[in-house]
Image 1 (cartoon, rainbow, N blue to C red):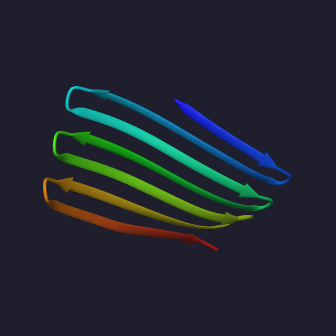
Image 2 (cartoon, rainbow, N blue to C red):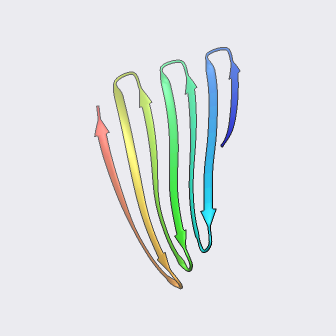
Length: 92
């Protein structure tokens, strides 16, 4: 696991990445968080690959105080075919 952290005043950046693989299968997870005062932005991605098939889930959240907007993207890739969906949620 790799972690990177940076802080300056009220601004903080944290990034982490995990990965494991065996044979034709690999799993990875990455997460990035940026916080400046009450405002925060976070992005996380989980990816699973087996041969030519890749499946991933990405989530991005922007928040300020108790208000937040979240967007989730799912992706399935098999050879040359790609399918994806986009979902969102608001807490205002």
